Each structure stands twice: as C-alpha cells, then as structure tokens.
Image (cartoon, rainbow, N blue to C red; front, top):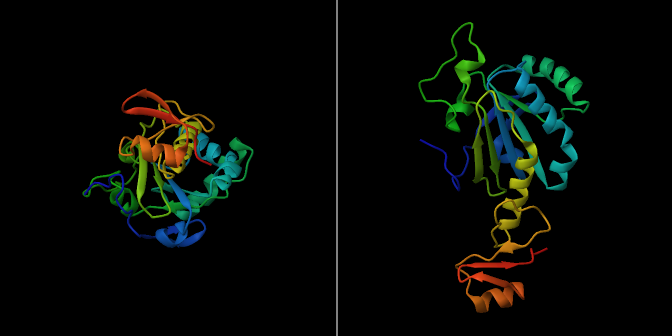
Length: 216
C-alpha cells in the first residue's frame, strides 16, 4: 500500500550505525527527514550525504532530525561515513538505517513487496530507493520527492520545502518560489473577515488569491 501525504509513517524498529531506533520515538516532538540511497560507496549519494552533513546547523535551527537509509549493512555505513566526511569536510553525525532486509524501502513504497537483493547486486537493483520524506512531529508524512540515480538532490530545495511546511503549519500557504521573509497566501477557506482578524491587513490579488505578511 502506498504511503501518501498525511499518512502516519510506519513505527518501525530499525538498526542503524547509531544502534537500534524506533522511528516514532526517535522523531519525538521534532520534524524529521528520512533520505534514502540505493547503495553505499556510490558517487552521487556520497556527495548528497556530504551535503546533509554540511547542513547540520540548519537542521538543528529548524528543530529537525535527519536520518539516512541505505540497503547495505551497519559496518558498511560506518566505513562509508569516512568517505562522506572526507568529501564534505564535515562530520556526518546523523544515523543511517541498515535496510538490508528492505523492510523500510518497502514500507515507504520505494520498492515493490516482491523485491529482493540478488547476489552481486548493483545500485540499479534498488534504484528507486532515492527519495526524501519530510515528516511532521505528528509522525505524518508531509512531503516526498523521488529522484533518479543520476541527478543529485538539491538540499537547498529540501530546506526551502521544510521552511514552507513549517510555515504552512501556522495556517497559511506559500506561493511558488517562496522563501522565508516573503509574503504568504491566506487559504481560501478563511473568510476576508476572519483573515483581517487573524492576519491584519492583506493584499487582494484575486478573490481567491490573497497575500499577507508571514506570521511569526
């Protein structure tokens, strides 16, 4: 069954290079990002894990925990982190799930239920395990993105999407290309009278498109 936006993520117990983790307990009252990769020691994924490591302060500033997933084992993850840190020039302090049995990849609908890893496998056997999942403190999936193996993820966009989700949790929406500090959209379900009471002055661009200052 597909995992859709606003679904509660599975409360799985997983093995990581930081030890055993139960996902819901690990998330706690934080936001969380689960980012997945088809194999350790691969070039694009190494640069991506490095980008995540470099953004440690940004994740912390947003009250967000990050966790990786790869279908290799814990010992490979530990060895791979040395390469990641060399490339990034930053400590990779986040855990990486060892999804050797593909339980997480299947539960998050990145691989079909009948998938298995053959002997001598290559990254192509788990190519669809290239996703980003942003999860709210309520343990619900808020956003997902899936990439092919050849296109490195833009973590500036992941940060921007996270900012947008955290802003929308305040009862507003964000327009195209929105970044923090810009005006936001008042949802159509809010009447003009209620919008004035809740947000103060707003700009009426169209009857259904109203912009206001972002709530603090």
